[in-house]
Amino acid sequence: MLNREQDAQIQKLKEEIKLRKYSSETAKAYVAVIAQFLESGKEPRQFLLEQADKSRSTMRGIYFALQFFYKTVLNKKFSEAIPLAKKNIQLPDVLGREEVMKMCEAVKNQKHKLVLALLYYAGLRLSEVINLRWKDIDFERGLIRVKIAKGEHERIVFLHEKVAGLLKQFKERDDVHNQILISERGNKYNKRTIQLIIKHVAQKAGIKRNIHPHTLRHSFATHLLEGGADIRYIQQLLGHKNLQTTQIYTHIANSDIKKLANLL
Image (cartoon, rainbow, N blue to C red):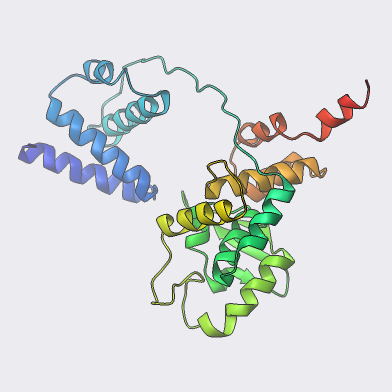
């Protein structure tokens, strides 16, 4: 149970997170970590050592939450030089083009088909699909304006003809709504809904692997790279701040690998 001073610190933490416009997921994670830390009554190093059996990504999250708390709430230097193990490079799962086509053909519900198209033909994140608004679509110029969830910046993505065609089917009916993806009951789509849509469609298409919405975004980037697109353009389309993040797709794009096979 937190005391009055600790409650005040948690409140200030929430304010500092809000001022920096961090995502709701980051806010929840930071608040949960710091609340647990304050309740423990331990020093940062002791607290981190107790979490040492958790995954690398979890440990990094805890470390950065503590660092943020000390810097912005306590106005103290976070002196713990805890060595953070680098993440192992885990190559993303990618669908083949034929698998994507099978998924598109397996969808009967047109709004579900639109969800699939926004993930693959625009390479949007799950949160970006959910929050897409009609005013973000520029049919005349063939563009989509995407607000990056983690900040105020926007990026421009091409409006693929398949996405445009599906959007026009709902334009007149749903134009009164700000959000594009609205259920028949008038509710905004949520993450769980879209995750279930993709899982169900993959099963109908006969794909045995565990497919997530982000799998389609990975496939979008990989297929563009295999098609000869410049990796810096792909970086811009994906909204990656660092090129290094985008370069992971060079490990799974098979266009150059196929060329090597032809040398034998």
